[in-house]
Amino acid sequence: MVWNQPGDNKNGGPWGKKPGQGNAAPDLDKVLKDIQNKFNQFLGRSSLPPEDSDKPKHPFSGRWILGLVVALWFLSGIYIVKPAEKAVVLRAGKYLKTVGDGPHWAPSIVDKIYKVDEQHVFSYSYSADMLTKDENIVNVNIAIQYRISNARDFLFNISEPIVSLQESTASALRQVIGNTTLDSVLTSGRDSVRDGVQDQLSDILNSYHSGIQVVDVALHTINPPDEVKEAFDDAISAEQDRDTTINQARAYQEKVIPEAQGQAQRLLAGARAYKQQVVLNAQGETARFLAMLPEYHANPKVMRERLYLATVESVLSKTSKLFIDVNKGNQLFLNVPVDKMLEDNGDADNPVDANADISGDDKQTAAMTAAANAAATANNPSGSYLDNSNSASSYFTQNQGAQQ
Image (cartoon, rainbow, N blue to C red; front, side, top):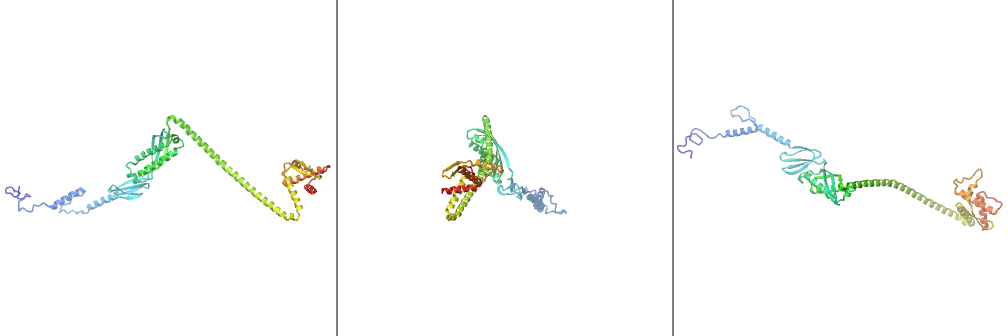
C-alpha cells in the first residue's frame, strides 16, 4: 500500500513521523561508531567513548598489536639445522631448495621444512628360507646397514623408502642365493654372497633414485637343512683343516725360499770369484810365457829342458805313481806310495806329521826326492839315497841329458 494514501498515514511519513517534525534520517556516524566498537571488542580493545567524553584517545594501540603479531610470525620462521642434517624446504607444497647446517629462516605459513640426518647409519635384519642353485633350501639371516645419501630423493621419489629397501633386499638376496650352490654358500662362497647382495641391492636402489646408500651387508647365519647339517659341519671342519695346512705350507715356504736364495747368491758369488781367478791365472801364465820367449830364442835347448822339468814336477806333485829312466836306458815304472814315504821321511827329532797341511811346493820337492831315491836304489845297490830337492833335480837333469 502506498504510504501517502488517505486514511492510512497516521504517523505522517515512512519514518513514523509526521511531516514538519524535523529531519528523521538515520545517524550514519553513530552506525559507524557502533561497527568500530564491535571490531575493537573483537580485538580486545575498549569501546570508543562518547564524543562529549573528556578521556584521552589511543589511536595507535591497534598498530602495536599488529606489529607484535608480525614479529611473532617472523620469529617462528627461524630454524636451525644440525651439522649432520640437511633441511629440505617446500614452498606452497613445491620443492624449493636443500640447505645445510646452521641457522636459517623461512616463512612459517608459506614454507614447510623437513630435516633429514644424512650421517647416521641405520640397520635392520632380514631372514628367510631360500632355494639354492642345486635346489637345496637354506635359511639365511643378514643385516643391512644403510644411510640417507640424498634427502630430497629419500623424501619425495619413493612413497615408502624403508619398505622399498626391505623388498629390494629380499629380491637381491634371493637372486644371489639362487645362483649359488649349497656347498659354496656354506663354505667358501660366503664372501661372494655378501658382495653380490650388496652390489645387487645398491643397483636396485640407485635405479629407483631412492636416496639410500648401502654401507655394509653382514651375513649372520646360513644354516643348511637339518637332514644334512652334520655332513656340512664335517665339511666346514675339513675346510678349516685345509686352511691350517695351507698356512703352515706358506710359512715353510717363506722360511725355505730366503735360505735357498741366499745359498744361490753364495754359489753365484763363488762362481764369479772362480771365474776371475781362472782368468787371472791364465793371464799370468800368458805373461810368464811371453816373458820367457826372448830367453827361448836366445837359448832354446836350456829353455826346453827347463819347461820339461817344470811340467814333470807339476805332474809328479799330483800323483803317487812315478816313471823313472835308469842309466841302462830301460824305463822303470815304480808305484811309489808317496804319502807313506812322506810320513816316514822325517827324522826322530823332527818327525813329519801325516795330517799336517803341506803346500804344493813341499809336496813337489818330496815327490822328486822320493823318485830320485828310488832311481838311485835301482842304479846303486849300495842304497845311497838323495835327501833334498836339489839332488833330485840334478839327478833328473843328468838322466835327461844322458838320454838326449
